[in-house]
Structures are given as C-alpha cells and as structure tokens.
Amino acid sequence: MVNPNLTHLVFLLDRSGSMQSIKSDVIGGFEAFLTEQRAADGQCVVTLAQFDHEYEVVYRAIPLVEVTSLELSPRGRTALLDSMGKLITDTAAEIDATPEGEKPGTVVVAIMTDGLENASIEWQRPAIKALVEQQTNDHGWEFLYMGADQDAVEVGRELGVRAEQSVTYARGKSREAWAAAAGNVRRYRGDKLLDPAAAMPAFTDEQRFELSDD
Image 1 (cartoon, one colour):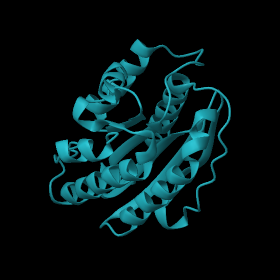
Image 2 (spheres, helix red, strand yellow; image 1 turned 135 degrees about the horizontal axis):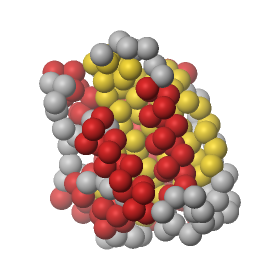
Image 3 (cartoon, helix red, strand yellow; image 1 turned 120 degrees about the vertical axis):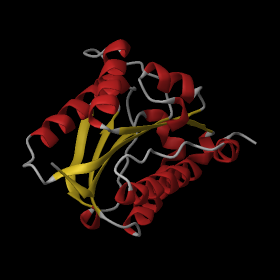
C-alpha cells in the first residue's frame, strides 16, 4: 500500500562549471518551483542531489516545509549518468524500505543540466535507459529532463525519459524552465489526488516556444 496523499519530489541538479553563468537564474527558478509546490494540495517530501564529476546528496526525503534556500557552487565536469544511477537506485531502495502505508503514491524525478555527459565511469547510457524505463513502467515514477542548449528530447530519449516530458531551454531561460515544470508538476499532483492513474502533463508547444532562444 502507498500513501496517495504523499508526493516525493526528487531533484538532480547540475553544478558543473558551465552552470556558473546561469547560477542566479537556476537558484531563483528552483525557489519559485518549491513555492509553487507549497501551494499545492497534499503532502510532499523532497530529495535534492547535485553533481559535477562528483555526486552529493544535499538532503533526502525531508518535508517540503523544511527545505532551505538552494546553494549552488559550479565547478568540475558532468557525470550525469553516474549521478542518475546513484540517485535512482538509492531512492528506490529507500522507498522499498519504507513501511507500507507510508510509501509515496507519487514520485517525480526532475533533472536539470546545461551540459552533456563527459565524466561518468560506472554507468553507461543503455543501463540508465533501462533503469529509468523500469521505474517508469513498473513503479509509476515520472521523470522530467530539462537540458540547456541541446536537443533535450533526443538526449532524454537515450536516458529513457519520455519525449513529452523532456524539454530544451535556452541558457537564459532557466527560470522559465523551472516555472513550466512547476506548473506541470503541481497539476499532476492535483490530478493524482483525484485519479491515481493520472498522467504527468506534457510540456506544451507553447511552453517549448517560450523556452527557446528567441
């Protein structure tokens, strides 16, 4: 049994050196995302991990109301695959160990990066794709992939993320990317309270246009 009123938001945030130029926008956008979720119905816990060529869990499954301001110190290279593998397997193990009735009814994993993989050692793309698809198809997790200045739909597809839930954003539009994701996630959480089979809203053509480089 799961708790249909509980959402677990899981964030994987790129802090590699190239993020320095959009640091303030990423921080502001993330804070706005959380503000949007605080206004939503239902309970919510949050996990945040950051990565460059190293992986760090900032906090794990803490109540949304206890989340503090984001600190981001860009550095290093981009070990996206290793970080995804670690975050997903650790979160799955944590949920498996949670008592019945306390497991989250909704799990959303949101990934934001501005660069392409260049530093992973342990995980390869096919294994990550299989892992993401397993959690999506067998456990009902939803994944969002937000990639700057890249074909995020194609990159997301190679990672197992559905095309409708991957979005490209221009480097100067990270706040807007967070805003688009926040609205979709809040709507999804509300829909799930009414219908456990509800699906995550897709990024719309309008949202994609607004996030493009005008």
